Length: 160
Image (cartoon, rainbow, N blue to C red; front, side, top):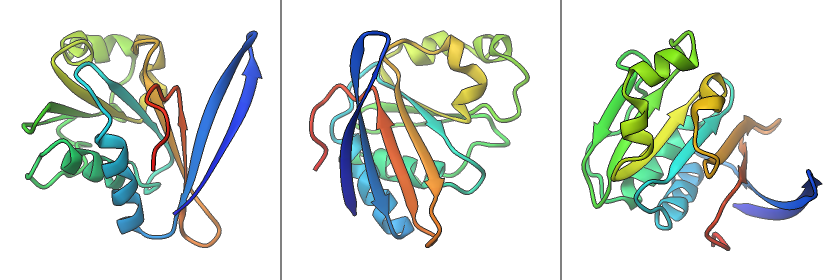
């Protein structure tokens, strides 16, 4: 897993972007574990990426770090999957929703501002409804079949 950190300037402030290259699904799960170790009650992660980019795969690693022993699968057809661990995990897939209003009608505020961690796949569809402190993780498939994982708005320092 190779890591790069760079800075983007906009709106008069510096934003740190952390990016990782993972070669396998196992690497992506390991990165998820590293991310999950930092997460706290009330954290929200917005996952972005195309179909099969690795959104559920990285969520599996995050869940493992949160002490969740259940198998984590894509909530595409159920929309929301809930898991119990050291912290409660709400794993939400908004792909099938039509609007931010539909998202709010699901009881999103309770999940976003609750006592657990909220991970939202296809978050681009509901971006305006998410807290400003939301951590964004973008995943894309590289030419060699690996993944480029970019993390923005990360408040916890170095991921090692």
